[in-house]
Image (cartoon, rainbow, N blue to C red; front, side, top):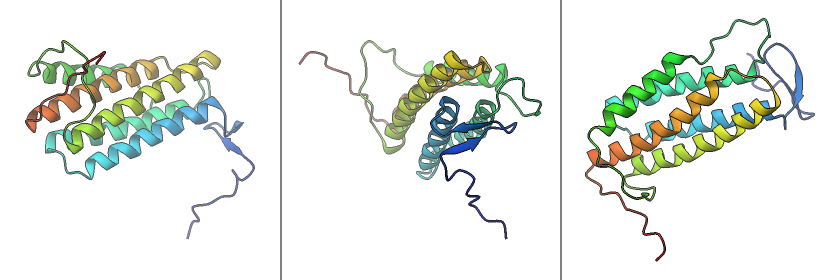
Length: 182
């Protein structure tokens, strides 16, 4: 039986794809750790039994996030062939966003995150995606990465925002507008 623990990280270091050892506080580790957290939270949405269509899209995104995580864990130039985030991932998100937005009321004010259980969790995932994006941008300022990673995670957070609105509309839950200065 293969053990889950290797003890290789017990001194606060981890290996990237390609073998380079880095501290667990490294921006690259933080970035793909945030991707992992985002992916896990999507799993909690799937546990709420969303519609078949949403579940299918979320499962696809979970698979894409594994690609994003491995892309971030593999420095450019390392001679390991891995899948990388590419333009079709981004275009697919944009197509879905555009299709959903056609049936949603135009926003005139900010809306408060919430709604149904699934809608509220989609808003939470959106905010985690934004944090993930910030960590990927910090990494890109320090080290070369696939430029599509930033575009993908930015579009993905937009996707979660629109998905939350779409799900809440399907469940006939009215959006709560931000009142601003009360």
